[in-house]
Every structure is written in C-alpha cells, then in structure tokens.
Image (cartoon, rainbow, N blue to C red; front, side, top):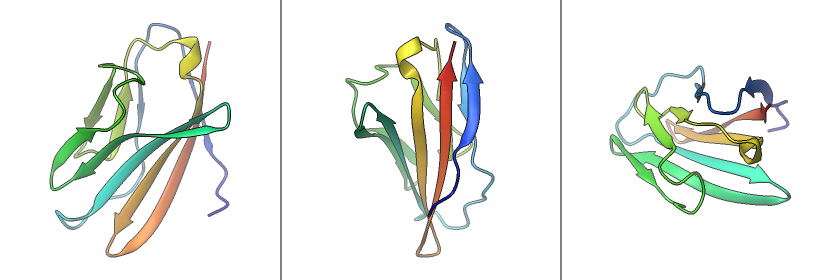
Amino acid sequence: GGDIPLQVTGRVGETVTLTPRLSLTHPNDRVTWTFRNNGKRIILAEFREQKFIRVNRNYFLNRLEGSNSGTSLQIRELRMEDSGVFTALILVNGEMREISYNLTVY
C-alpha cells in the first residue's frame, strides 16, 4: 500500500523498538521484516510458527531481536548506517498488511 512510513528517531548507541499496532490471531500468521537503504531491500528476519528467524546475518549481526511474538523488531546499539526504512509485511488471515518505519539515527 501507499502508506506513509512512520517517522522514528534514535540516538547512536541506544535501542529502538518498532511495534506495529496489530494483533496476530493465528499461530500460522507470518511477519517478514525488511530493511531498505541505498535502493537495496534486504529481508532481515521472519517470524512464523512462534519462532523469530534471522535471515540476513550480515546486516545488524546480533543487534536485532524480535519481541511481542515477533511483531516487534528491536534494534540495539544503534549506528548511523542503521538509518533507513524498515517494513513489516504481516500476513493476517490470508491478507497482507504492510507497515513501514523510517528510522533516522542521529
């Protein structure tokens, strides 16, 4: 959808949590987190069957964590280069929802 990304700011070294305001209803509902920066879009992590699965460990290394049954993404020890658009692709009852966050680290 053409939803406008939510603006989020964070300080270098701090932690930020991105939390979509959605409640998942089924264990088979899925959340896929992507990160867009410099025209590249990377899949960071997936949450499915109650498990948080890291996909691209080259990015954010071990600074990412899923919480709130995977719908929240926590980014620790923020760095300037973490700035970009994070998107949660959420599958609820067979319907795709997309929520984006424009993170600015300063």
